Every structure is written in C-alpha cells, then in structure tokens.
Length: 334
Ligand code: NAD
Ligand code: UDP
Image (cartoon, rainbow, N blue to C red; front, side, top):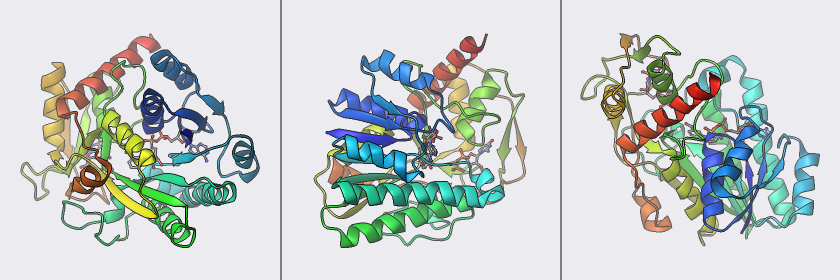
C-alpha cells in the first residue's frame, strides 16, 4: 500500500515508518520538523535500507498538502502530526487548537477529495478522563484537563462525523496509552527538546547525569505504592499496531486502545530502570502534578480480537531500549 505518514519523523511516526517499510509498504512522510530533526530520515534509511519520499510541509496548510495528494496515488494515511505537550497547551491553547484541529480537517477533506479510503488517527487515553481503569473503547469520553486532550477528543469527533456520512472513508482511531522505549538499533527514540515533561525521557536524562534528580509527582494516590499507575507500551509494539490498523479490512469508524493492559507505578518503572540498566536514578517525592489521574490502563482485548495485535515486549525491554538510546545521544553530543 502507498501510505502517507504525517509527523513521520517524530517519535512514534519514525518507528511506524520502519514497521511499514518492513511489511513491504511504500511510505511518504510529511513533517514540518517543528518537533523532529531531518537526521531521522537518514537513520530510517540506515536501518531499513530505504529512503521514504519526504515533504517538509505544514499539514495545516492546504495547498502544499494538496499537492502531495494530487501527485501521489495515496491509498492510506496515518496522521501523527500534532503538538503534544500538555503543559504548553494550557499556556498557548490557540496554537494547539489551530495545529491539531486544522491538520485533521485538511487531511480528512483531502482524503475525501482524492478517494483515500483509510485514515488512521493518533488519539490518546487522555480522552477517557478520570474514570475507573481498565478503559474500554465504548466508555464515554469525559472532559480532559487541558487543551491538548480536547484536541484529541475533538479530532475524534470530526473524523467520526465524516466517516458516518462518507461511505468508503474508513477511519481508525487509535487511543495510545504511554509509549516509551526505543528502536533496538538505538538510532531512533524519544528525544524531546529542553526539559522533558514525560516520565521516561526524564528518567533517562537523570541516569545520564544531564538532570540531577527525578521529581516523583505524589506518593499518596490510592495505588499499591502511592505513585501514579500507567500502562507503558513499547513504541515498537505501538508501531506494529499501526501496521495492523492500516492493513485492516474494517469499514466505517473503528476505535482501538493500544496498550498492554498492565498498570505500572512510577516507582516500579524507576526501579525496573535501575535494576535492568544497573545505573542509579536519584529521585525525590514532590507534590502531585495538577491534572494527573491516579490510574490509567487499557483493556486491550478489542485490538487483539479485531486487529490480531497484542504487545510482545515487556517493561524490561522498554527501560533497556530507552537507556540504550539515551546513551547514544550522550555519545553523539560529545
Ligand atoms: P512527536 O512530537 O515526536 O511527533 C509529531 C511530529 O509531527 C513531529 O515530527 C512534528 O515535527 C510533526 N508536526 C507537528 N505539527 C505538524 C504540522 N502542522 N505539520 C507537519 N508536521 C507536524 O510526537 P509523538 O510522540 O511521536 O506523537 C505522535 C502523535 O501521537 C501526536 O499526535 C501525539 O499527540 C499522539 N500521542 C502521543 C503520545 C505520546 O505519549 N507520545 C500519547 C498519545 C498520543
Ligand atoms: N511523572 C513523575 N515525574 C515526572 C514525569 C511524570 O512522577 O517528571 C509521573 C506522572 O505523575 C504520571 C506518570 O509519571 O503518574 C506518567 O506521566 P507522563 O507525563 O509520562 O504521562 P501521562 O500519563 O501524564 O500522559
């Protein structure tokens, strides 16, 4: 299949591009490099031996995006391009609504115009809001605590409405839980600019000495050890879920959780990182982070039953590959 991947040089996009190539698909990438580096394209080539066609464009801009659709006979679209920093979305909400909603609307319109029948969208477990885990796809969407989360819920709604009235426009909404880990080559992984917001890249930078200690946001939640519980999923497993989704024969609108179905606390993750990598990660317990919920993990049975997908990699694979990637970042800097 000829597949356009928006945001294909980002963390999840780049891993998905590799899995698509490994499964014999032709891949085109559109990315404006707002949160990624062009070197990732060379790394994709190093690993796969193939260089996807790359378009440095902003997919909120209709004209350059349309040019791709007009020239290439695209059969499927995976839409990763988006801004994703929760805290930043509270500070600059309009930028988030503009970028994340306009991109989705433009791409959906172009798919309809050019007869692209498969649209896979990167959604998030955040759309479930605060309700008891495990989260199941048929649960109601509750308000999230930030504009980023709202852009995911709104994009889901936009695509749901479009799929309802356009036969042949088949949409799959993938709700990711907490992607971590990196490619086994150590060449690509999550490399946020500045101080990381998310737990895993923060832990990796503390381990490498780039940051002095980890702040654990609260140890008074109603969980086994008081720290927050999340469903961490290896990014390579997540990427393979996208291959199953784009190859699926399902029609209309379909929604899948992509998670392991297992909850892990912050302390369990940090201790697994320390034990598996034999490196210290100093931490301090601090106040809860506003907006965080206690527990979030998936019921991942629908993706298994309908897409034939389930995770294969465990927490040890996740923490080892994250550290392997981080170490290489360090050696590249020096
Ligand atoms: P990322 O920032 O690494 O990748 C996003 C890519 O999109 C970047 O390369 C960026 O340059 C590009 N981009 C952003 N806006 C663009 C635009 N207007 N035009 C063209 N390119 C644009 O993020 P990621 O972690 O790989 O996440 C990918 C998608 O998955 C995002 O939509 C994100 O919201 C969603 N998601 C991520 C997580 C997570 O924890 N990483 C969880 C749930 C959902
Ligand atoms: N967390 C933490 N310290 C950090 C970053 C995150 O204790 O520096 C905790 C956070 O409170 C949550 C978990 O780690 O319980 C995962 O947070 P992350 O931001 O990675 O993902 P989220 O689930 O919020 O999307």
